[in-house]
Image (cartoon, rainbow, N blue to C red; front, side, top):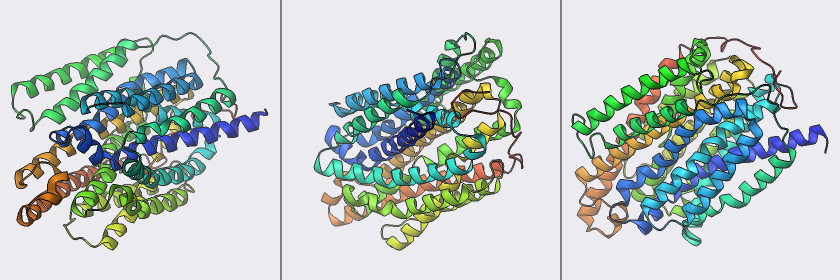
Length: 490
């Protein structure tokens, strides 16, 4: 097998991994209502946010360690391990017998899933010439993500309707095994230049910090009052863990997140922007599908068809934006602005909003996402030193994942509280069986809750636009590193 063929096969497998990651995130969204109805119709809605948050939290906790392992043990080995753990979690999720086990197995799946996107992007960066990364990578990434955004809900709805929701997890296995085989045979093995020490204490502190932050967001204002003892204790614990983590990163010989990276102006702005984007975008697909299924009585199997304008906008925009230079912040600002406007417009949904208007807003959302997805990572990869490629890539993904976990928890809390406050039932699946007057009240309460979720996300996205204005015009230092096509850093 020639070097060129090995490289092409590995890149193809990497793109399939990105597709697998996007599919998994969105395939669950389409089947969330059938899952809740089957496993826990009484309290399932309350636990629904954890179905997303458990995966996101586990991903966030594992990401810093993935980055350091890529820079030390080699990207190929870490990639194979991440996909294997993800597949194990998928099989166990499919076999879950209640919501508690499903959430636990989603967390295991998330540990592997944390590497699906982040380690894959490191692998692609090692195999792609630096000059190609911003243009071709963004265009192909937009195409793959756009396909996944539509294919995920469609596949999830069809599988849930015809084979049962468990197959939304089992379907990961064939594609995942094929990816494992191709990468194991074709991908080059990164050379290790010297022995390294992994900062496991730093990784543990990062994981605990992420857990504490998420618990505050999930429990605050719901299970406990914001000024209650447990929430104040968690806030104090979070502050202590943050201090310990920063101390450890200064003291460790080889920290998992070198604080020197924050001296890089590109990295310093990219981290918080990506966190805000993760927070604001996490519910875009989930709550759009919930709105269609509950408020408009669209079957789960066909609800994904309504996302086609989103995918088209994302694909066209991603390919067009991929022609821009890596350091050009204009496409990023345009994308963030379009995404913000679209999410805010979804905050005006009613019980009878015309479908063409919904499709138009989805197309605008896709146009914005096409300029945002992956761009912050490619900009950061260009700006950092080669020895920090893995750490910097996974740090940006860590910010997005943690922001997404917070967004999922807060959005779920808002939805449950707003819906319960104005509805005669707490179970959306029971709305069709209610008397006409109660059914109308429940639908209005549900749509009002969805609107509040989107308006909150719109405010967060507006903050990301303001912060992105601080981005260095040139995208940070150029040519800080080079990567050979063979995958060895030079």
